[in-house]
Length: 48
Image (cartoon, rainbow, N blue to C red; front, side, top):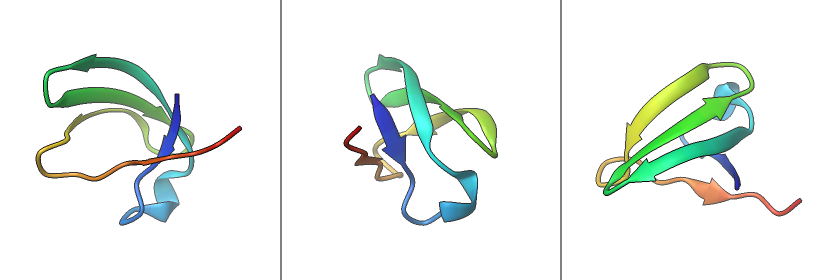
């Protein structure tokens, strides 16, 4: 799944690597691989 973090457009588009509970690992174009807590961060799905 491709996503973006609306509060951090500088990260670019990201691809979800894994989801465990509220934690998601996303590999972003400009920020690299990040572990995010979905209880705190909102991601938007990007249509291909």
